[in-house]
Image (tube, rainbow, N blue to C red; front, side, top):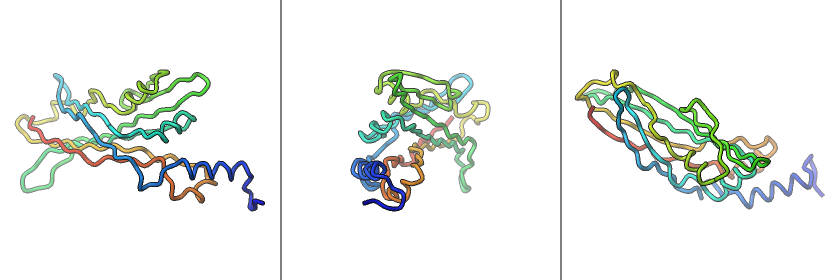
Length: 190
């Protein structure tokens, strides 16, 4: 017999989640790859991908309608001798995916594309949109000094999802939402 406001259905859901969701220590290693810094006539651009971000459990959660957000942090510094580097650009961009069970399609929104909705029925294509940054403008070239040394630092992480209030007490040690890459650094001279 269950007490204190938990119904049999809630209790069964909690038990299923405890068995299905991985522990924090079992998180998969995610990494930024294919990082390229280049420029157009007017802007400094960055390209990058995240590998190892999607687990089978995360895919199941997305397919059940749980919205998921990846955050990318990008910092640009001008290197200075005998002094701390000076930060000249600080960007945080987000990619959010949500699955619509009725339409059987994925909706992906990327903040650096004005959060325009991109839809597809293919999980593979939606995953590609979630894990890549393609020609993101970092800073206008007229803000950079020719011949100066610069450093780009980048990192990606999965934004934490807030569980329903009553599950916080039971599932405090369980996290599906646990990926974060290391910081990656690229030095270059403009």
